[in-house]
Image (cartoon, rainbow, N blue to C red; front, side, top):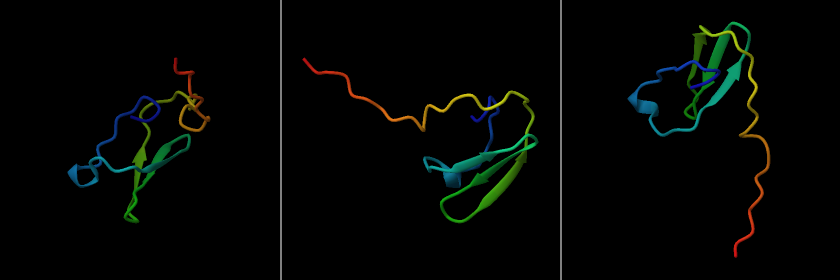
Length: 62
């Protein structure tokens, strides 16, 4: 799910990591095997989450 929109990529890409490029009208999905798929956006909210890009800090273990 990206920007609140579910996209189906098929069983061949199950459990694979993909890169998604978001523009105002499309989602471009780049797969690890060189395949690219362009999907029209059906939602309008902007990308707000940068959770995957921020560094994680470990909590202290007692």
